[in-house]
Amino acid sequence: MSDHTPRLMDALDAFEEGIYIISEDYTVEYMNKFMKTHFGEGVGKKCYEVLINSDKPCEWCKYDEVFGKNETHHSEVYLDSVGKTFSLSEMPVINRDGTRSKLSIYRDITRSVEQAAKLKSSMESYQRLFKHVGCGVFISSKEGRFLDVNPALLSMLGYQAKDEFLSLDLATDLYLRPEDRREYQKIIEKKGQVVDYEVQWRRRDGHILHILLTSNVRYDTHGGILGYEGIVVDQTERKLIENKIREAHDFLDKTISCSPNATMVMDMRGGIKVWNHGAEDVFGYSADEVVGKMSIQQVYSSEVSKTIMKMMKDDGYGGKGRLNSYPLTFTKENGELVEGNLSASIIYDENGKELASVSIFVDLKERLKAERELSAARQHLLQSEKLAAMGRLTSQIAHELNNPLFGIMNTLELMKTEISPTNKRRKLLDMSLSEIMRLADMLKKMLSFSKPDQESRVELDITTVLDELLLLYEKRFRENSVKLVLNLMEKPGKIFASKDQLRQVFINLFSNAMYAMPEGGILKLGTAVTSDTLKITIEDTGTGIKPVHIGKIFDSFFSTKTESIQGVGLGLSVCYGFIQDHGGDINVASKEGEWTRFVISLPLM
Image 1 (cartoon, rainbow, N blue to C red):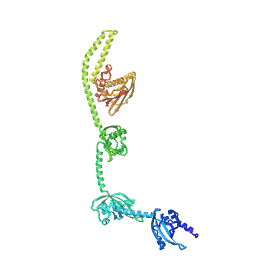
Image 2 (image 1 turned 135 degrees about the vertical axis):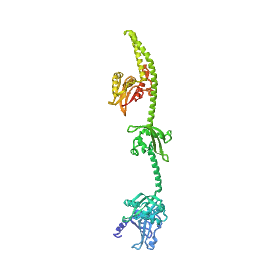
Image 3 (image 1 turned 180 degrees about the vertical axis):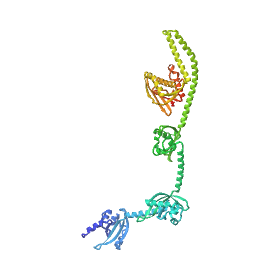
Image 4 (image 1 turned 45 degrees about the vertical axis):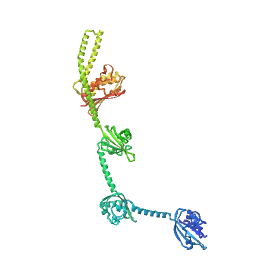
């Protein structure tokens, strides 16, 4: 072997193609590195054992041509043993000793073969797609002519002859407005593409089509614009359907918006989706404030929301998914009370899945106010009729009793003059006379009930009236362990009233409060002004009033006091009559065993 042989072998190993040499009996004489890497060491073995692991020569082997005819052959072979495709060159070699060998060169072309196959498949797929796709496909020139179109585009635009279609001027023959073509070119050449570009085209029969264009620019090798290619989607039917849906939506939206009742739509988590003008008026929030920004739990409490949803999912309130009626009362942020009735239902999809809920709230504030006023008026009328009837009766009784009572009183006074003050009988006379005077005082109250004092009314400061009474009652409060808590306004305003009648009202309420606190307690007295009304609050921490009695305490001759003469039951009836006669009102609230509160309302001057 010459000195150059190792260098030659290194050079052959550096090749990226496989090189091997076999003798006339198929024995491998040489393999370079590429061949060894793919097929393993095979020198001394038969070539077909190395390449295909067989005991017979390879089918593609050109042994006869190379050795018999001294020809070179080229072919492509695929070897399962390595899973690759090779470009094979087989050529004869005459050795120095006169023997012959075959030199084979294997070049790996697997990737290029695969790419060629993919390209071919892609081209075939493109041709099938171009021909059979349902939407229109086009290639056009920059100047405004179609270069190629698929059958779907021809059918879409009402053409049968492709040559006729390719002769059209796009701007004038196809576009409804030529300026739309220029705008399309301006956009696509600036961005390189357009996606879902809406435009109107004209069919061959003159009908207008609504088209969506998605296309890109075609460039030459120097970056110059050749034209455009893309797809065309006919959305005429969709446009018609969209218009109908839009009209229906607009009609429904106007119907909901113009409804005087509050209409709301929420997702299943309470997020507000629809909020009409009625809801804006009732709840005080604009649609911009709530839609997509607030939940219904922020409008009224989460407890109410949970209750409503629970009732909707129960069959007992109008059927599953429905709530026919739910009285709802809550206070808005500005303090205004909202009263009304809520109906609601759940919206389901075709599979029965809950999507949203819709609620309609009817504001009943005015109606409920009118009903309460009517009920109050009826009660006042009934009370007035009862007072008038009892007044007539008590007036007759009082007048009938007065004459004999004063006769007895005068007789007792005359008898006193005939008996010494030191006589025991004198004390009995004094006791009898005292009881007669108490009875006369009762008759006076009965006459006051039947015919209140008609003394002239004057401008009064209620604080002054209360201060005078509290000065008189200070000692009694202290003796009865009653702590007084005052919350009186400095200048509440003037009222037009009878001072004696108001004094009688407060004296009665103070006495009742002390009676209700036999072991002592707290008496709260306060004044406040609301609009044009003066409110006087008297609250005690006494025994309270039983719920069954609270509706009767202003009735004539009703009393919970059972001992001696205290149980006549005219005090609060007289107070009620006085306050009503002044154009005011008196209300009571109580919790049995804890407290009682009277609120007197009088009109300010």
